Length: 111
Image (cartoon, rainbow, N blue to C red; front, side, top):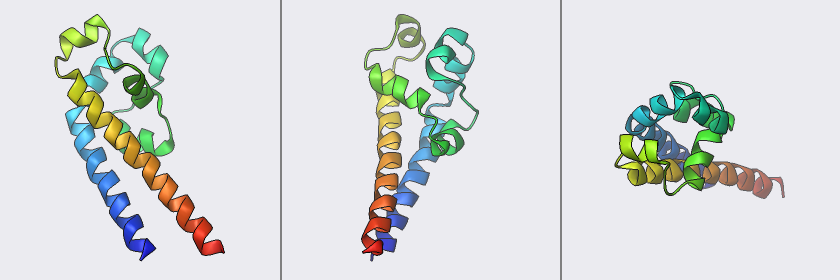
């Protein structure tokens, strides 16, 4: 039964990561083209939510999580920043949930 729950959470994370990648591609490009922002987030690849997030490179999602109100230049370029931030936070939460489910499953099956 636990394997089905792991599969559901994994598929939910994968689907949400693909959606986030397409929805936030403009914001990712915006960050990538501004070195001062990259200093705060670290490097961002073209497929951040599919590859960097799974490698636990959380700089970009942490930045969005910690900044509910964006700086002026981001707010002017992305009037829907709060929606993009929400998408990023949901994907980040699913990523953490997937890790917790995997670890919990491992611990449960050891005893």
